Image (tube, rainbow, N blue to C red; front, side, top):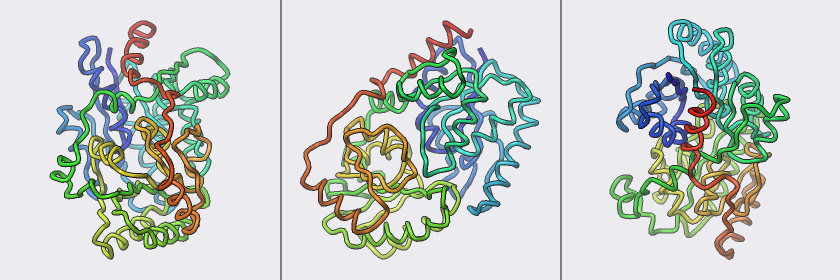
Length: 367
């Protein structure tokens, strides 16, 4: 069974990894990775190399990189992706193609497949993020997909509402939990040797992306976050850079300036999947507005100060504290966490066997 895997960024590749291992490890499947988006961008770490370093061939590399972070650049990148994928779908046929998530470039790759009747298997459908334009893209991908693999039961129910059918909808849990269950994360010593950051010191992990609804406010949001970090004492800061969304460079520049001014702040374009999850394990708290704070952080569990509205609408778990993007409120939430006990774990995202479930469902129902 010939399977395509659409991957456009470091984030979705890390989530895909257990599924890739399952597909490549089963002779029933002939998987082929289709890399595009920021994977091919030197500015974002040229992360297609990480896929190849993990031992996977990348037979398909499609240039869709935006040339800026303004609305017209993102819109142009959507069009460029549609155009470049049109010839790809014409020349390449698959029995099934996986699409993960909700990003604009993933939407563009999928919508260009519709005239070719490509069967899309969508992962992470049914979720809501009201502070980002991703909702429109995610739900559109759902409507264009043939099979749906959701990360939690409420999301499966929403997919069923969206498509008006119970057919081909499966709640399999979060693939990222497979990673957390099965891989060996770096020890504190290994992390220090690899990245030069000593996580024996109390550390805040910061991953902050732009809000793409009301994107004009991102300059003020970046200033509030940096101001909060400036007045936070007793911690070191481990910062990963924002992705290629509207106004992302404003946040990137603000964070880089903070790193340059503070010897206890460390910035990375890409820690890699194992590095990022290891940092999450060893940090005291996360601050930001990334989906990993809503899903993966619940595995440990790890306290998360979830900023603003980007992730508003996702399932509320006990480890997550929502906070407006205001320096005083961020400081207030940090003070609460310092006094709090370890948050509760919930198994709403499954038990780390999602890849096995997906493979079995496909072989039993769609082969």
